[in-house]
Length: 236
Image (tube, rainbow, N blue to C red; front, side, top):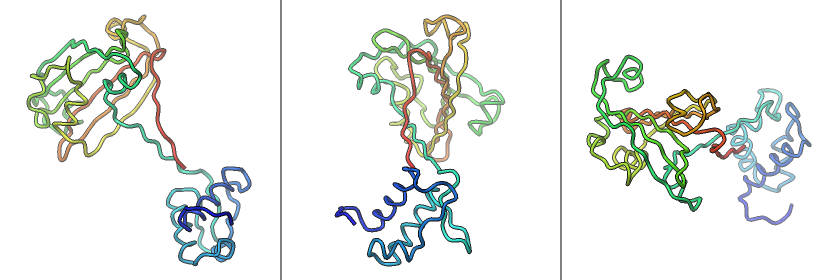
């Protein structure tokens, strides 16, 4: 085998993945036995066993009792979409970020919000609506509800100097987040706030964040489809 700095078990994993990615081995094809891989790589049985176990956990192969190891029918793919501060994202592109604050208020949780935040209906909450601009062009409409327990001074923050995302990550350190993304058409109100024609396609991310025992915030982020795209990383 060629010289490499990879640990022995990673060499085995890389070999198996290469055979699959090249199409040499197809879903359902048998993977060489651990004994065969041990002989091919000149490593211990324990090393090969670790490699195969990790490949199984990653969803690359399936271990079938009595039938050995086969290429998985569908590779498990992990997707990572980081929670990013829109301000930092715009700065990375060498552009200028500005914020227009449209609403900053106290509201009462309706049934749907109470369910998301695990609060009683009518509980006090904070609500903000703002438009984030890149070089003066609106690229994100942010409609956010915040749990006062997580950020009691939220309404006093000057959001022309710091974004809600940045502030909340400082005040309520993130322990968990969930999101969904869908395509939709801009309502008349959203279109006016974003400076686009009504009915124009948009991407909408709905994201909730948890800090310790509390749901900290729920944000609906609307992006004009012709001005913005989401980027993520995918790994086998």
